[in-house]
Length: 60
Length: 319
Image 1 (cartoon, chains in turn blue, green):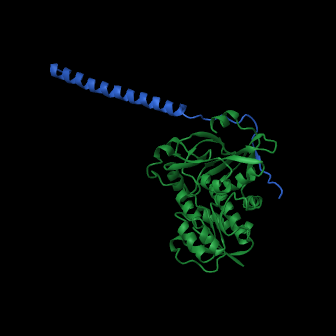
Image 2 (cartoon, chains in turn orange, purple):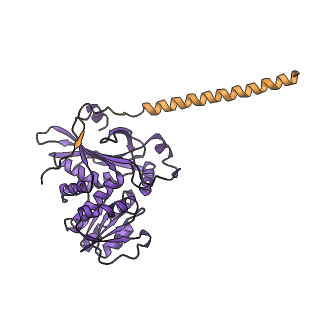
Image 3 (tube, chains in turn brown, orange):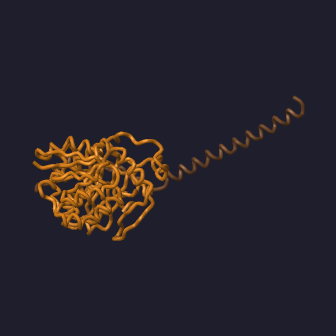
């Protein structure tokens, strides 16, 4: 490769790095968004005791 | 011999036809093609509307000829249109059951049964999981993309569907699911049946994909029938001694089966003349709720109640 070939190769690397930076930024933003969504809301606390049982209907 | 017509032969319609004989004495079944609604069959005592699409126009045609109508519709606009048929039903002297499915329907009956155990009831919260057939799945999809209606401190509110996440514990084997506000009918029907309740809400289970795609057309065709669904009804109020009580009941069953059982119970009561003329809502004080729930149990649905104490932290966080 002469001078022209080396220059072209450095140009391609810059494009790849730009793409890589953008991909990392997109993943970072995705993680931040997912974290916000997960932390929003009150969620819930499991019932502390008890459980489900068949319902006995009251006498009429 | 009495004549019962069933409109629609989807998951719910098929199950109604198969299980009607378990609750109703010998009868003649009339199958009505939803595409030929104009030809109302003569001499029908009760018609069960279980087809997809709007029920109100069909109900009006049957009410015109004096047939009692049981509708399993869960679409908000359709339910409002059905409620507007009260005058027509009264004039015809027949009942029009609005919301005779799992929700609305079974949820209202459970709410009434729980509220009757309290001296006063001021809050009712309903949660739903699962779908029956494709039409039900489409309705749920649309509900998650609409405007949720709720009743808070005596005022009607509208919130964006898909908001208001709450972790809800359904009866086993369904278990816990995140539930969100949606364009559901229970608050409207429960308000009529429980005018004293100052807080009414309804939520539906959904995952992130459901919420993300709710405002888009359905990307994939719905299943032939959903898996095991569930409802959970939480009623809060005071007991006779003035203490604060929270009562919870629910069902874990195929949604199509629960819906069919509820519709069958209402059809049987309409056939026996145990429903008043005009619009009837599940949970109305004038209905024999216990008898309806017994019929639903007879049609194969196991009712359950929660015996523990729900977390006080959750109650205070989500009033």
